[in-house]
Image (cartoon, rainbow, N blue to C red; front, side, top):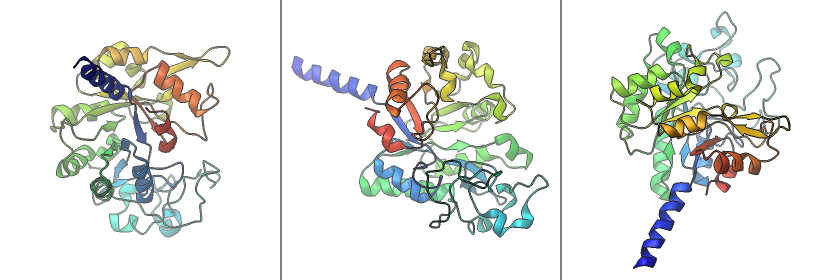
Amino acid sequence: MPLFFLLLIFMSCAHDTQKVVVAHRGASGYLPEHTLEGVAMAHAWGVDYIEPDIVLTKDNHPIVLHDIHLDTTTDVSQKFPRKKRKNGRFYAVDFTLSEIKTLNVHERISLKTKKKVFKKRFPLADSHFEVPTLVEFIELVQGLNKTTGKKVGIYPELKKPEFHQKHGKDIAKIVLKVLTQYGYNKQDAPIYVQCFYPPTLKRLRQKLGAKMPLIALIAQNSWEESSWDYSSLQTEEGIKEIASYVNGIGPYTKQLYSLDNTDRPIPTKLVSYAKKYGLKIHPYTHRVDQLPKGFRSSKEFFNFFYKQLEVDGIFSDFGDVALRFSK
């Protein structure tokens, strides 16, 4: 009997130390981001969660797209050249779903150079990919879960709630309705909902009836991700406040460490603040082809974040690589 209990304890500890792997925008290190083909590839790896970023179309369909613009990952400028705004950009909210479904998704490019952001990733001219809807994304994940027996979750991000609000669109309410229809509005559902704008998360929890785990993403103020002052979320006071309505934080990896004069990473206090108030920590983003200064390999990267900082999981463009270090 004592041996049996020791085995149970060992199994429990092993489970607790397993880290969550979030497939960032699908299998984006290998296939164009946010495509159903990338979702299928990430699912086959057996990651814990697959991330869809969500924006709305003109006719209020939630689609899976990282930006409010269409021009860095699709051929929109070729198919609808007259629909660009005065700033030269093409916005998803200006297009109906049927129009967006005519677009071809390609590897992310720089608007200035028209060349790939990641040179060694999927060729620009090869194959055809579409912009998926949130419903298509969910049904693919749930369908693959059923046929494979896996239990892969989803990790949707509500993009730019303030921008959508200015266009008369309530992205939080629309997305929550879809998630509820597919069984995700439960405390123990295989989902995290993330957002860079804390007031939206607070509204989801306190006014819209969101029961699933929520994650407060932390940007750099220079990115102008929202009107929020993200420096406040790197203080103990800020973490204590959001802990009243979220289950965790999603910090930029570089917010969790600084480099000493030998380029050795030194932890900041943000991890200890989050742990003090019981918050999960899921930093973003690991990329094999773009490791941050201070890390010479993915092994060094994950050793620091998993073993030294003891974060709960990591977003990665290369979910298959992240899985090697997650157990």
